[in-house]
Image (cartoon, rainbow, N blue to C red; front, side, top):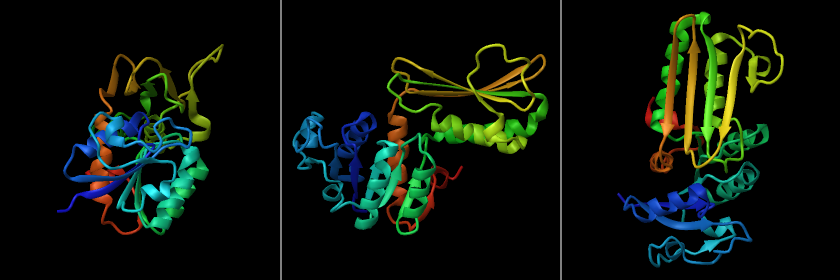
Length: 268
């Protein structure tokens, strides 16, 4: 098989650097483009040289259309505000898109669904195999333990993460509220303060911690009388998400237009 031609949006960002480095070191992929914001100091520099990998012949560009000229798949872990423009560029170029950006609102989700009508689009707020297994375990525990157990979610990330709670925490909350027949708008509690009174039986608490260089931790608590079950996933390196995203890119490259998830890739 020929290497899959990949372009990376935000090629020198927190996740972009890890993605670009892995692509340049993996014979299954060929880096054909990388975009940066217009004021980035490394604009028009060779991405390989910037990353200490030698000259690779791929210059960082502020024009995503240029980065997509030879691409089969665009991988995007940038920001919600940039997503719609990136999707429009991918649609115009006929390029599949793997999106790992979190903190998406209704407008960004609608943009994903719109783009999926013309190109293959895969969105995953967490590309980790372990997290997607956690979703399954949380589903099983919620069904098995019943309503006598109180539900809480705690997530922790590095101090540079901009959105809270994390997309993974919100997905976990979606699973819990759906299975319990709860209202996500009314029954989720994001942090607590003051004299709140006793905890409601319908309440699901979601707490976000931020500090240091924590890559990502998620714990779902099932608190019963005399016992407590904790299901935890800890990401120790961004390489976990890089592996999942590139596996998704490889899988998505030849798929027809449509909206996909990491669960489709992993079969979990």
